[in-house]
Length: 164
Image (cartoon, rainbow, N blue to C red; front, side):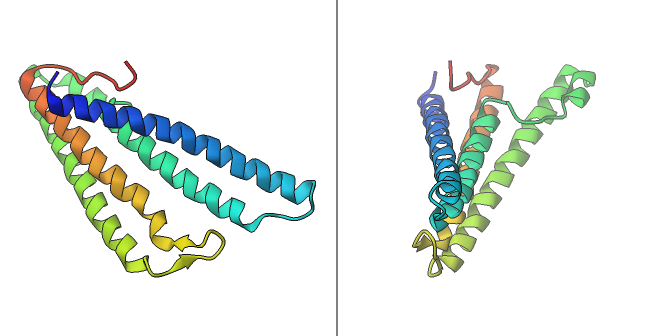
Protein backbone atom coordinates (compact mmCIF):
# COMPACT_ATOMS: atom_id res chain seq x y z
CA UNK A 1 0.00 0.00 0.00
CA UNK A 2 1.41 3.36 -1.00
CA UNK A 3 1.61 6.37 1.28
CA UNK A 4 -1.07 8.14 -0.79
CA UNK A 5 -3.42 5.14 -0.55
CA UNK A 6 -2.85 4.97 3.20
CA UNK A 7 -3.62 8.68 3.53
CA UNK A 8 -6.81 8.36 1.47
CA UNK A 9 -7.94 5.35 3.48
CA UNK A 10 -7.39 7.20 6.77
CA UNK A 11 -9.21 10.28 5.49
CA UNK A 12 -12.17 8.18 4.34
CA UNK A 13 -12.26 6.38 7.69
CA UNK A 14 -12.17 9.72 9.54
CA UNK A 15 -15.00 10.99 7.30
CA UNK A 16 -17.09 7.95 8.19
CA UNK A 17 -16.66 8.64 11.91
CA UNK A 18 -17.34 12.35 11.44
CA UNK A 19 -20.49 11.33 9.58
CA UNK A 20 -21.54 9.17 12.52
CA UNK A 21 -20.89 12.08 14.91
CA UNK A 22 -22.87 14.34 12.58
CA UNK A 23 -25.80 11.92 12.61
CA UNK A 24 -25.73 11.87 16.41
CA UNK A 25 -25.75 15.69 16.43
CA UNK A 26 -28.56 15.72 13.85
CA UNK A 27 -30.76 13.31 15.81
CA UNK A 28 -30.00 15.16 19.05
CA UNK A 29 -30.93 18.53 17.55
CA UNK A 30 -34.18 17.23 16.09
CA UNK A 31 -35.03 15.41 19.32
CA UNK A 32 -34.40 18.55 21.35
CA UNK A 33 -36.53 20.56 18.94
CA UNK A 34 -39.45 18.11 19.29
CA UNK A 35 -39.03 17.99 23.08
CA UNK A 36 -38.92 21.78 23.26
CA UNK A 37 -41.98 22.19 21.07
CA UNK A 38 -44.27 19.57 22.58
CA UNK A 39 -43.08 19.24 26.18
CA UNK A 40 -41.64 22.64 27.10
CA UNK A 41 -43.90 24.56 24.71
CA UNK A 42 -40.83 26.60 23.78
CA UNK A 43 -39.31 25.66 20.40
CA UNK A 44 -35.53 26.17 20.27
CA UNK A 45 -34.90 28.22 17.12
CA UNK A 46 -31.34 27.02 16.65
CA UNK A 47 -32.22 23.30 16.45
CA UNK A 48 -33.62 23.34 12.93
CA UNK A 49 -30.69 25.35 11.57
CA UNK A 50 -28.21 23.01 13.23
CA UNK A 51 -30.05 19.97 11.88
CA UNK A 52 -29.95 21.37 8.34
CA UNK A 53 -26.24 22.11 8.67
CA UNK A 54 -25.60 18.58 9.96
CA UNK A 55 -27.50 17.11 6.99
CA UNK A 56 -25.13 18.97 4.66
CA UNK A 57 -22.02 17.77 6.48
CA UNK A 58 -23.16 14.14 6.77
CA UNK A 59 -24.27 13.99 3.14
CA UNK A 60 -21.14 15.55 1.71
CA UNK A 61 -18.74 13.45 3.78
CA UNK A 62 -20.73 10.32 2.92
CA UNK A 63 -20.61 11.19 -0.77
CA UNK A 64 -16.83 11.49 -0.73
CA UNK A 65 -16.46 8.14 1.06
CA UNK A 66 -18.87 6.53 -1.40
CA UNK A 67 -16.69 7.70 -4.29
CA UNK A 68 -13.61 6.18 -2.68
CA UNK A 69 -15.27 2.90 -1.75
CA UNK A 70 -17.07 2.67 -5.13
CA UNK A 71 -20.41 2.70 -3.37
CA UNK A 72 -21.84 5.37 -5.63
CA UNK A 73 -24.30 4.75 -8.43
CA UNK A 74 -22.48 3.67 -11.57
CA UNK A 75 -23.40 2.66 -15.08
CA UNK A 76 -21.74 -0.71 -14.88
CA UNK A 77 -24.02 -2.34 -17.45
CA UNK A 78 -22.16 -0.59 -20.25
CA UNK A 79 -18.78 -1.60 -18.83
CA UNK A 80 -19.54 -5.32 -18.65
CA UNK A 81 -20.52 -5.33 -22.33
CA UNK A 82 -17.25 -3.72 -23.42
CA UNK A 83 -14.03 -5.55 -24.25
CA UNK A 84 -11.30 -5.53 -21.58
CA UNK A 85 -9.16 -2.81 -23.25
CA UNK A 86 -12.18 -0.58 -23.88
CA UNK A 87 -13.46 -1.18 -20.34
CA UNK A 88 -10.12 -0.08 -18.90
CA UNK A 89 -10.11 3.13 -20.97
CA UNK A 90 -13.71 3.82 -19.93
CA UNK A 91 -12.79 3.36 -16.27
CA UNK A 92 -9.92 5.84 -16.66
CA UNK A 93 -12.31 8.29 -18.31
CA UNK A 94 -14.95 7.88 -15.61
CA UNK A 95 -12.46 8.47 -12.79
CA UNK A 96 -10.94 11.45 -14.61
CA UNK A 97 -14.38 13.01 -15.09
CA UNK A 98 -15.27 12.44 -11.44
CA UNK A 99 -11.93 14.00 -10.46
CA UNK A 100 -12.70 17.07 -12.58
CA UNK A 101 -16.18 17.26 -11.07
CA UNK A 102 -14.70 17.15 -7.55
CA UNK A 103 -12.26 19.94 -8.37
CA UNK A 104 -15.00 22.08 -9.93
CA UNK A 105 -17.26 21.48 -6.94
CA UNK A 106 -14.53 22.40 -4.46
CA UNK A 107 -13.49 25.52 -6.39
CA UNK A 108 -16.99 26.88 -7.00
CA UNK A 109 -18.29 26.11 -3.52
CA UNK A 110 -15.21 27.80 -2.04
CA UNK A 111 -16.08 30.89 -4.09
CA UNK A 112 -19.67 30.71 -2.80
CA UNK A 113 -18.48 30.33 0.81
CA UNK A 114 -16.19 33.31 0.42
CA UNK A 115 -18.96 35.43 -1.10
CA UNK A 116 -21.31 34.88 1.85
CA UNK A 117 -18.76 34.63 4.68
CA UNK A 118 -19.68 38.07 6.05
CA UNK A 119 -23.34 37.10 6.48
CA UNK A 120 -24.47 35.30 9.62
CA UNK A 121 -26.98 32.53 10.25
CA UNK A 122 -29.06 34.36 12.87
CA UNK A 123 -30.10 31.29 14.87
CA UNK A 124 -26.59 29.82 15.13
CA UNK A 125 -24.56 33.07 15.06
CA UNK A 126 -22.02 31.56 12.67
CA UNK A 127 -21.08 32.53 9.14
CA UNK A 128 -23.36 31.60 6.25
CA UNK A 129 -20.21 30.18 4.63
CA UNK A 130 -20.39 27.14 6.90
CA UNK A 131 -23.20 25.86 4.67
CA UNK A 132 -20.78 25.65 1.72
CA UNK A 133 -17.70 24.27 3.47
CA UNK A 134 -18.93 20.64 3.44
CA UNK A 135 -19.15 20.75 -0.36
CA UNK A 136 -15.68 22.30 -0.59
CA UNK A 137 -14.22 19.53 1.56
CA UNK A 138 -16.21 16.85 -0.25
CA UNK A 139 -15.12 18.11 -3.67
CA UNK A 140 -11.46 18.06 -2.65
CA UNK A 141 -11.82 14.56 -1.19
CA UNK A 142 -13.67 13.32 -4.30
CA UNK A 143 -10.78 14.59 -6.44
CA UNK A 144 -8.23 12.90 -4.17
CA UNK A 145 -10.13 9.63 -4.11
CA UNK A 146 -10.60 9.65 -7.89
CA UNK A 147 -6.86 10.15 -8.32
CA UNK A 148 -6.35 7.17 -6.02
CA UNK A 149 -8.59 5.07 -8.29
CA UNK A 150 -6.65 6.19 -11.37
CA UNK A 151 -3.37 5.23 -9.67
CA UNK A 152 -4.84 1.85 -8.65
CA UNK A 153 -6.00 1.20 -12.23
CA UNK A 154 -2.50 1.94 -13.49
CA UNK A 155 -1.06 -0.54 -10.98
CA UNK A 156 -3.75 -3.15 -11.70
CA UNK A 157 -5.04 -3.25 -8.12
CA UNK A 158 -8.36 -2.48 -6.43
CA UNK A 159 -8.86 0.29 -3.88
CA UNK A 160 -9.49 -1.31 -0.50
CA UNK A 161 -12.55 0.08 1.31
CA UNK A 162 -11.89 2.34 4.30
CA UNK A 163 -13.82 0.12 6.69
CA UNK A 164 -11.63 -2.95 6.16
